[in-house]
Amino acid sequence: MNLVLFEEAMQHVCRISRILEAPHGNALLVGVGGSGKQSLCRLAAFLSTLEVFQITLRKGYGIHDLRSDIAALYIKVGVKNIGTVFLHTDAQIPDERFLVLINDMLASGDIPDLFSEEEVDMIVTSIRMELRGLGLIDNRDNCWAFFIERIRRQLKVVLCFSPVGFTLRTRARKFPALVNCTAIDWFHSWPQLALQSVSTTFIEKIPDLEPDVRASISEFISYAHTSVNEVSVKYQQNEKHFNYTTPKSFLEFMKLYGNLLGRKRRELTQKMERLENGLQKLQTTASQVEDLKAKLAVQEVELWQRNTDTEALISKIGQQTDKLNQERAVADAEEQRVGTIQAEVTTQQQQSEEDLAKAEPALQAADAALNTLNRLNLTELKTFPNPPAIVTNVSAAVMVLLAPHGKLPKDRSWKAAKVVMSKVDDFLQALVNFDKEHIPESTVRCVRDEYLSDPEFNPEFVRLKSSAAAGLCAWVLNIIRFHEVHSTQ
Image 1 (cartoon, rainbow, N blue to C red):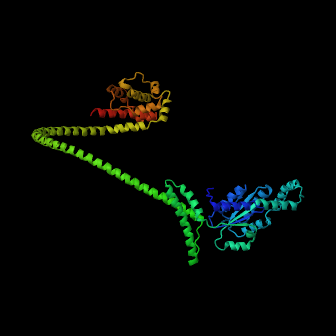
Image 2: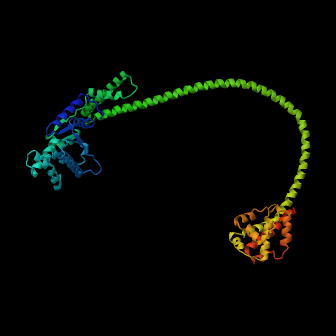
Image 3: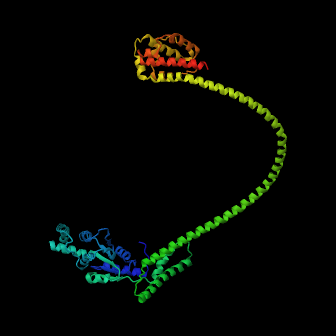
C-alpha cells in the first residue's frame, strides 16, 4: 500500500494493534470516508500476523450469502486455528439484517442456525482430538464451546463506520454490541502538518519542480484544505447545512493539481514548439527569398539575351516565309496526286471487299461442315474396316489438302487415312487452322481432277454412307470454292 505514515496515522496504527492483540479484541473505527480506516487496519493486522477477510458485494448478494461467508470464516478460524480480521464497512451493509449476524458475532460469537447438523458434527469431530490432547472431556457440548471460544479469541471483528448523519446512532441503539463489545477509535480530521507531509510526498513525485517551489506548493495545498474545513464550520453555523471535506477529497485535490499541471505543461510545450517551428520557417523563408532574388537577377540577364535571339529569329523566319510558300505550292500539287492514288486504292479496296463477300459463303459453309465433326463421329468413321469407295475418296482428298508444302502423298489408302485421323484432336485442329488462303495450285488441281470430277463426291450422297465423311466432303468442296473465288481477286 502507498501510505504516508505521519504521526497521527502511526498513533491510529498503534491503537488498532493494541485492540487486535487484546483478548476478544474487536474494534469500531469511526471516521469520514477516505480517512484511512481500512488501510491502517490492514497494516495493523499485518503487524499482528493476522489475515484479513472482507466480503465482496455483488448483484443479488443477500443475507444467505453473508451466512455462507461467515460459516466458511468460522471453519477457517475455529477448526484450522488461523487468526483472522473480519473487516466490514458501512458500505457493505445493503440490508440492515446483516447487522444482526455481526451483533451476534460481537456479543457471544455463536450465531444461531449458522451450521446444519451435518456441519456441526463435522466441526465436533475435528475438535474432539484436540480436546483429548488437552485432557478435557470431548463430549459434544465441550467441543462446541471450545470451538466458539477459539473463534472469539482468534477472530477479530473490525467495523469501519462513518459518523455522518444519524445512521450510526440508530444502529448503535438497535444493535448495542456494536458499541458495548468493541473498542472505539475515532478518526478525526487530519491536522495541517499531516496534510502537509502527505502533500510533500505527492509533490516529490512530480518531475521538473524546483525545491523551494515544492515546499511552497505543499504548504499551500494543505492550507487550502484546512481553510475549506474552517469555512465549512461557519457555513454549517450560518446556513445549517453540512459540507464535508475528507482526506479522500484532499487526495483528489492533489491529483487534480498534478493533472492540471501536466496539461498546462503540455499546452505550453506545444506553444513553444509551434513558436520555434514558426521562427525556423521564417528563417528558412527569408533564406529562400534571398536565393530567389539571386536567381531572378540571373534570369533577367538570360531573358534579355533570349529577347535578342528571338528578334533575330523573327527576321530569319520572315526570310524563310517566301521559300515556304513556294514549297507549299509543290506540296499542294503532290497532295492532289496522292488524292488521286487514294481514290484508286479505295476503288480497289471496295472491289476486294465485294470479292471477299462472294467468298464468304463458301468459307462459312466450310466452317459449318467442320462444326458437324466431333470426336464421336470421327471415331466411328475410323472403325470402318473396308469403307465404300466414295468414303475412301473423301479421306484421300482431305489428305491431299492437309499435305504440307503441296507435296502430294503417294499413299492415299484407307489405312493411311486412319493413321492421319488416329489423333482426333490434332486432326480437328489441323482442319480448323487450315491455311485456306495459300493452297498450292498443284494441290487444288489434284483434288479437282481426281476427286471432284466424281459425280458421287456429294455430301448428300456421302451422308448415306457416313455422317463424318459427309462433313469432310462438304469441307473439301467449300475450301476449293473459296480458293477459286479468292484466287480471282
